[in-house]
Image 1 (cartoon, one colour):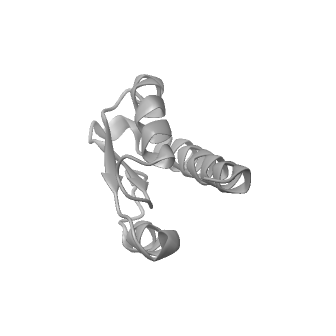
Image 2 (cartoon, rainbow, N blue to C red):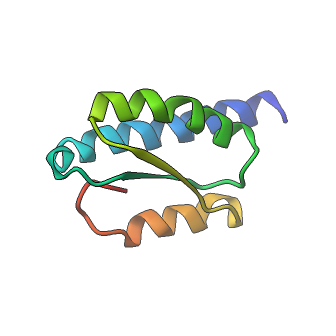
Image 3 (cartoon, one colour):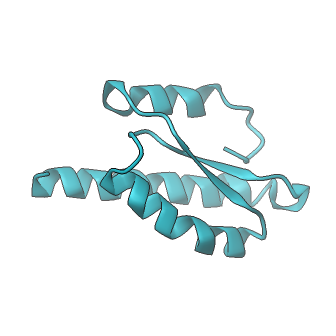
Length: 91
């Protein structure tokens, strides 16, 4: 993996986490599980970083965080999954 790939991966995960935090504030009282969609395959650096962040994110949000890998098509499958999700702040 090249340095630019690592930077892009970190930016992607940071964007996902910040989006989850911003959207999740509205639905934080629901008690449902937050679904963190990682738009890359399991075992990669993005997945490892998301799994490292998920426990702390769960504590901050007061909810369980589920990592959902949707790899393929350079991340567009995962992005499409998030775009089609219910706008309830849980994805």
